[in-house]
Every structure is written in structure tokens, then in C-alpha cells.
Length: 264
Image (cartoon, rainbow, N blue to C red; front, side, top):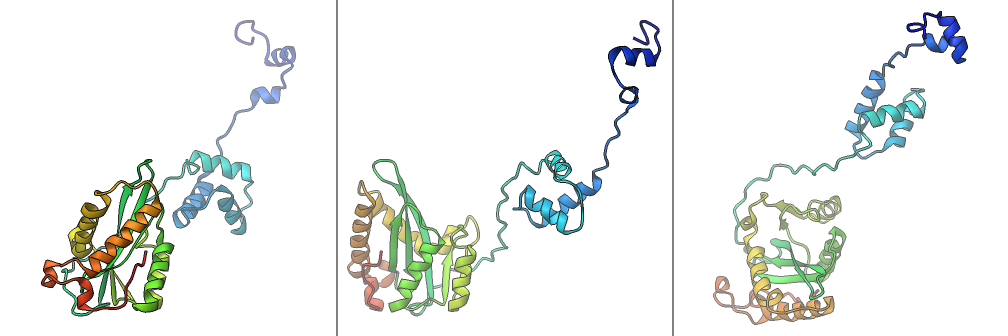
């Protein structure tokens, strides 16, 4: 109106019922650099916390920004789009696969997976003594978290004792804090192979191959009970009757009968 009709600003604002203060207002961008800095420091140190914990941590630090401003900056920084970070593994040192000289010096542990006839996946957990190649446990279920592994180790401890070394790969169950605490409590060294080097755990890998050929690939399983029953029979035969070339064609139980049975 002021340009085309050459009326004054006062008359134009009066005609449009627009306050002149509104017409003259020019927005000024807020300086959110301090909020951004504080949020960056928080999520760097505590990557798993969300908005409200960030907000109340800032309040406890003495900042009086209201939640609307903090949320606006939080979203502008895309902190609401949380990303999962892979757990960084410490450097694994290559260690030779030595033959233990007695039982309970080194146990090896590993997981296998397969499917039932209806498509459901299940896992098998194998634990063996590297000295006499004896299978100490082969548990099967749809889920075998670290807590299940610890329960198996506790059951083995009752009649077998605990190993000096427990060797495994870098799976999430093996690097869990719960297993680490159990190992510390029982004086067991957790020894991890290098990522991508399965033959550094060659004894249990050979066991897995036999289990795959002679059990998992040889039968069709409809239920987990069938898997457990067949696995127990296979484990007993493997320990008591199967001749091993590496043991001078003796069965594992002949190198140290420790009373192991159908532990599944």
C-alpha cells in the first residue's frame, strides 16, 4: 500500500488493523551456541540418555533455559535421531592354540545356529574341555544369552570345577559384563580370539563341524525337545564311544573320567 498507493505507513497499518510495532518488528536469531555446547558435552559423555535427562541435567548444573528452547536446539542438532554405536573391542593378541596337559586348564565355548521344520531359528551352545575334547555341555534354545551361559558354567562347577582359561570369540554373550564379573569371581581368565580368526579356537570349531554333519544336518527337527534329546544322545556317544584320531583313537572319557553325563 505504501508503494503502490503512496499512503503513509500509519494510514496503511490503520486500514489493515495492524499495529505499527508489529510492522516494524524484525526478528533477531537467538544465540544458542551455549545450549548446543552443553548438549554436545552431555551426549558425548552419556550417549544413551534422552531429551528429558539432558534437560534435567542442565537444570541441575544451574542453567535456567526452559524446556521448549532446549527441545528446539536438541531437535535442530538431530539428537532425537539416535544412532546405535558398535561396541569397540580391545585389541586381541594372537595366541597359539596349545594342547593343554590336564583337564580344566582350557575350556572352549561357541554357538551354532539352525532352524526347525517350521522355520523357527534355534541356537546350540557347545562347551568342551580342550585337553580330552570332552563335550561338557550342549544346550539348545531359541535364545541363549550370557545369563544362560553363566547358569551352565555354575552347573558344571558343581561336579567339574572351573577352568583356568575360558576361550571364545568376541560374541556379545562372551564380552558381556556379567560373564566378565563371573570370571573375576571364580579366577577364570577370559581369552578372546582375534576377530575373523576362528581357527584360533580350533578345537571347538572342529567340534562344531562334527555336530553340524552328524546331528544338525543329519536330521529334521520339529521341536526343541527333539533337538535336546538328539543332542544329549549324540553328546554321550561323542564322549564315551567315539574314537578320536588326535587322542590316539581313544574316546574323550578315557583321558579323564570326571563323571560328566547328559548335561544339556
